Length: 440
Image 1 (tube, helix red, strand yellow):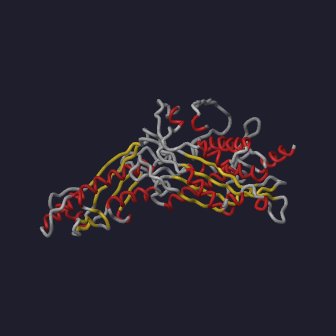
Image 2 (cartoon, helix red, strand yellow):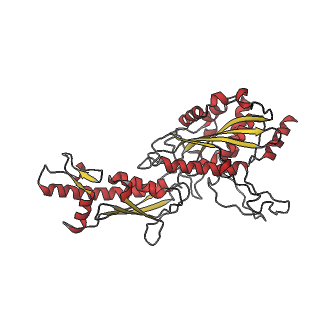
């Protein structure tokens, strides 16, 4: 089985060229690798006469198994074997098949043929994929939280919100622990004059690494709040002695088992201006102990013009196990943004050169990025698992949405025409040539 193959070796040549240099790109190698893997999986399944979905699931890694790459590679250091703790890929596949009505469409001539347009053919294809979550034993982030006299909180984190909504997600984690609404957490991020160190908003790491740091800092603050709340309640003398461990933080209050409570505003004011004055605060950091992969399946539905090779991507569906999803709205936005980026990567965006290395594409007039009217129908579904290496059970969500779009489109083209496009992007010329080669 593919997942148990012990023969893994990484080999690379570093060469100078006279073409445009390459740099870091969302997916960071996984995107390119999955095109090859998923196209091969599709071909092998058909050659063996097996259902391509069942063939993939048979070869998919399972919880409790070692991550194969972790046995052979570790960012230039000695390999650090990691065990896969969570993987809901099978459940994700089942939900994806149901969402797209796979069994009604796959290899069904009634669906594949377009009424009144014999030159058009529909196809449906999928790709299964994964990604890392931060870089194990390398990525580190810090967080600092202080309580204000009105019961609000300032949280400072080194991670910069690049538009992903990370400020909101980190604040949600802290708010959950402190028992206050999101609006009571004032976030300052990415200001190196004031905020703790963070390796950076990269490698699908912010929610996992910086979120755990924020969680630890919030737990320190919560412990101090419970201690002060218990002291304040006991000083009243209107009920039984209460222990800090018995205090529950919720709804902007610290509440004892008998229902007596003090508000966050009262605690904040008391801590700064009354007995045993102190600044209630907490600071913590978190280094990624592992790189738990999210798993996903992406399904593409296409219409292909058999005469010109033009491919229209009609729908893209992503079903993912990304651990516990803290904010479904921002997570869905991450997925849809990645899928849209994957659409361009998989169907239109390329840099062709002349034989002497001159670029044939010099601007957006020639380098086609899909426009809003060209976007397909998008659907995002999450299947939750609890990742035990993180206090909130999260895994990454930002890079994997790019990984499966191109191979899913290529597999859908194969389903429509029986023609293999083995390099991205899946352009009309490549589809037309593949179709003609099949006919020859």
